[in-house]
Amino acid sequence: QNLKVVAGTLPGTVVVSAKSPRGARMFEVQYCLGDTSVPANWKLGAQHSSCSKIKMDGLERGKDYAFRICAFGQDGHGPWSELTVFMPS
Image 1 (cartoon, rainbow, N blue to C red):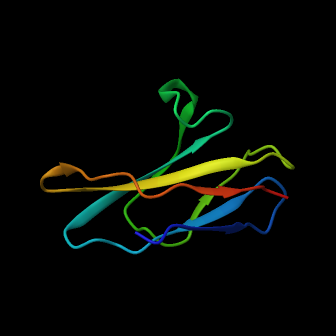
Image 2 (cartoon, rainbow, N blue to C red):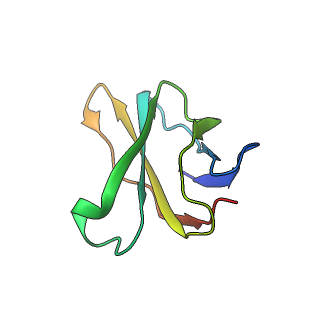
Image 3 (cartoon, rainbow, N blue to C red):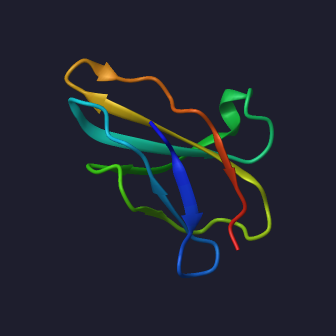
């Protein structure tokens, strides 16, 4: 899904984008601080009808976050993307 995370215009914000798979109707972005293998560490960052320019705010500056995205379509929840690690400024 080619997940891309870049700095937003305000401190503690990021903008997430990915390539949309065919049939996708909704997208969910999650973020994680800490061990990515622990399901409880993952938090909902955003749900959006588009997978481009999804803005997320309220992140702590100077900490490495792992991000992932998945698509929802007629057949339900798709697989999670590869992880992307990014430090908000």
